[in-house]
Amino acid sequence: MSCNYDRHTARDPVPGAQKSPTQVDEDQSVNARSTDTLNYPESKKRRLLELRLLHHYTTKTSLTLSLTAPGSAEASLMEPWNSDVPNLAFGNDALLNIICAISALHTVKCNPRDLEAIDAYRNYLNFALREHSNDVAHLTKMNADAACLSSSLIRVAAFAVLQERPLVPYTPPMQWLQMTKGAGNVFNEAWKFIGEDDTSIALRMVMRTPVLKDPEALFQESRRQDLLHLLHGTQTEHMLEAWSAEIDEAYASTLSYIGSAKSAINGGEKPQTVCRVLMLFPYLIKRSFIDLIEEQRPRALVILAHYFGLLAHFKHIWFIGDTGSREIRAIQTVLSEEWQELMTWPLQMLAEGSSSAEKSWS
Image (cartoon, rainbow, N blue to C red):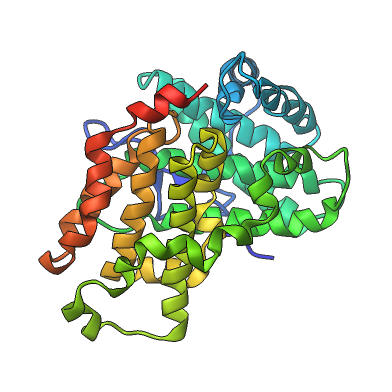
């Protein structure tokens, strides 16, 4: 099967340029194995770097991936990321490399001046994507669990770098959407080999988030009742839009997803559960909606802004940060006056911030 990781790689920083050190390059292919970034020679320096990255991962980064606070009732959720996943990674190069990449990315977030970590993130991400692509092409029961976990960490990396992407001129975050969709497809294929294997780390993680066992519940028609104005608003523009049953379903099902998340937040669902669902947005929604975003259809962008509005509740998480507010403001700038009224709720979420969510995160 194919996986859309080939465009996710990084370019060396340009001195003096207004470009984040973690920004990924959308022009080079990670599958070009002859590139310099994939020639990372074995040395004492590299061994010490990897030890540093693994130490940072086990003592700091892994504690953030479970989305639980130390000492909380759900603290046991940290154990897979903290202990089981690294142990499995010693037998799988893709998983080991993506752990190093995520650790380096987290290090850069904590210390943007850490040039060694910046380079390490780029190199180990490229290593991970190359090895993961090989695993995907040769999935077996032996590597399926590691492939699932690698795809999960790739999703985190893809989301984390949204905080640094240039937004002028605005283009939709297609790399994140496509990579997460691809990672989800990999997860589905690998899942066929896992089945009911009670030794699977990925299975244990999914079982701890009930909604992921039945994602169809997120797309019930009743979930979008408060958002129907996004389907029928802006009458003038609606008359000019290309429309079909497929397009209608793409919009409607995405609104059900957003409505489900809003209801969960307003209903007091655990923030950890809601955040896990939100991180899977590109994977769970229909491919046809992603296509509408790529075409920069105004209605699709408005709906995307509503998704990003939900992230205001989670901006204190390092791999989310101010992504939601940045994307909403950027989308607003490319919408005509006809669509501005439908941006009221996302803009309201920016004004409210995330203080209430931070208080409940424990």
